[in-house]
Image 1 (cartoon, rainbow, N blue to C red):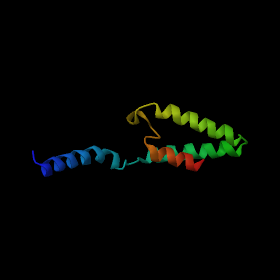
Image 2: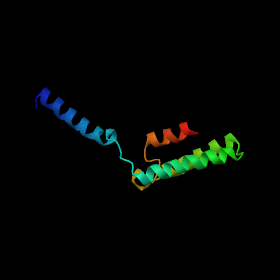
Image 3: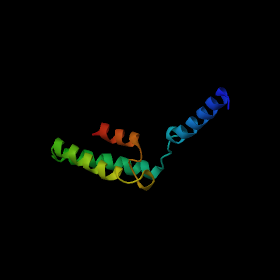
Image 4: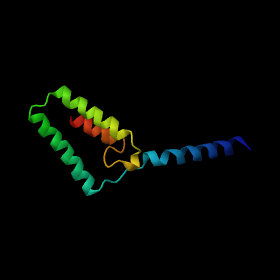
Length: 90
């Protein structure tokens, strides 16, 4: 096989492996509502006097548990951008 054909095949395979990771996930209205409620409830808990360290540690514990499931079984925090959104909101 000539070099250009091998490069073309390699490039094609690389692009096909990256496409699923690049494609944006479409959120449903229910997911957006649930996410908003999660962030709202977290803010209410903080406003009720829960210490910041306790709150942040609880968030980290929750994320560890959620991320232990495959993405297709999660209702929330399905990818890194979801996790980043939650952590920045805290």
